[in-house]
Length: 190
Image (cartoon, rainbow, N blue to C red; front, top):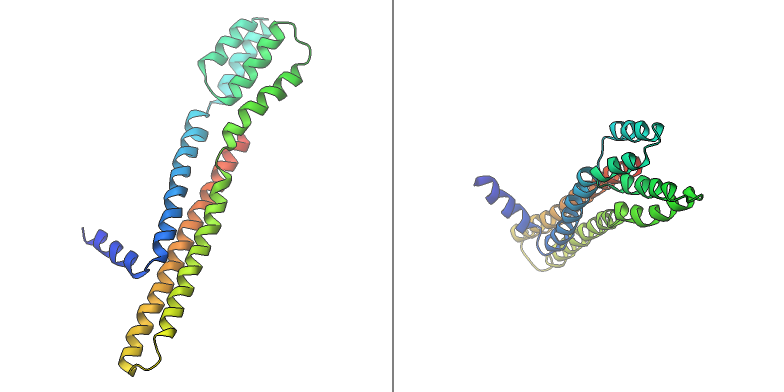
């Protein structure tokens, strides 16, 4: 409970700039969760095992058996291979064209929303900078005509606001960039 209280105090010390960064972080976390689920769970397949099963059926000239193997796995890769196998079974000669056509449908599903993570990382840094500048402007703008003791208090509040916004913005940005890299790497591996 003490940790939550400390986090709430830390958040409130950042003033209004923290709300902007929190909004960006909520979008970022939502995209990360959805993309990790889709790319790393739903689209994941043990490709060696799958490939060996498909090749085994193809070597036996059992195209329907290979298609049935594809039907057991619902991933972009298996849907592409299934389309090529079905086209082959129907006598289609331009198998590369079939693969390219179905890839144009399947690949955008893998890349969907991932670029937003880099945008949200940039926005988080900029929101952090905006909060930093706001804190410093408020801090130095309030110094005129106050006693030395009050100046110290005003400076500490303004600098605290500035540093909290900077730290939160950088934290959200770093997290977004790291997950962007992980998701893009996994997508490219598929």
